[in-house]
Image (cartoon, rainbow, N blue to C red; front, side, top):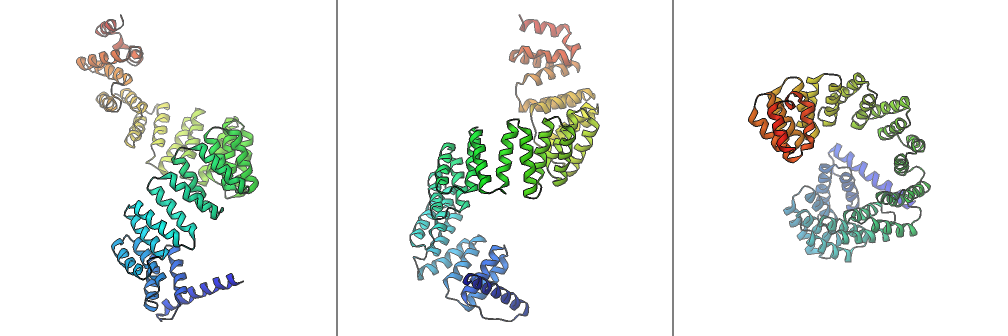
Length: 464
């Protein structure tokens, strides 16, 4: 009852304060009420409101350290570190062992990337603090900033000893093991934690993820099952278990779990996408397509959803339908190279070579400089008679993949066709030195060149 009354009083103070602002009156609030009001604004990201409340609070209570420290916190947030340090020094003169003062001093040092010095201040604060858990969490983060993961995980472990429900500390502990690439250590840590806290669904979920990383799928599924027993609304555990079942070709069981998540929380595009993938594996095309469409309806920006529909039609050789959907995807996000690559391949299948070339070019411009893109684009350029552009494309590709025989044999063929005999011979000889077996490329793509007497002589000299 007392807690409820306290909360009611705080809310009344906030309402009274906001009414005061609207009326331009100046009313009196005690320092505790100002602290609540300031924290409320800071927690809701209303920094300007918080600053105004601090100013009014200090005008009524100029000597209250807690309000001065909130002013320091705002100054640090705004990167006004010199002003913050100046004010903090004045506060520290009055009470050099105040843990909040030491914490803010550490915060300034951390902002200046002086993590060792920040850790020293936090250790001092730890000695004087009433609530050690908060200081231990800050110490853990500071060690993380300093890339000292061993010490970081020790601090987070201490946080969990004080409060086993501190999930932030639990996640940070696991992150330390991940940074240290110590999966076995993470498994050991979680197992010991669960011995004392057997109904912690978060810990079971994390243990399942660790077993999944080492491919011990049986133990991973068992861990996810325990997470579900601990909290039967824990969607993450259902999803992870379903992913393992899907990987194990147990598609019906995976579909059941993915579907279950749709009834626990709001439907997700990811669940629909995975259900569609499972149905596709089961050769149920109608159900697969139905769920892919639900995925993009739920999240029109889900690139994997549009790609799933496009690939579905592409695999079924329904290229016109595939083109319709990849065009929709490009309309939504024209900067996605995955879309342009599919666009190129589909147009190539349809014989729309100029559009195909555009797709490959766009994909390359957006950073997809895979070898196959250079090869495919050059082949399409050659098909549409853009001979000089073909040479430029292959030469650009050679900059990314020096001495690549697939490019060199193509360059040889193109240069022979363009009567650039010296360039062609140079490319051919270089390619033959690297890998003569790939000369089949020249034979397939440039049969007339392959039959040239001069070319046969060059081959004869390398294939003796």
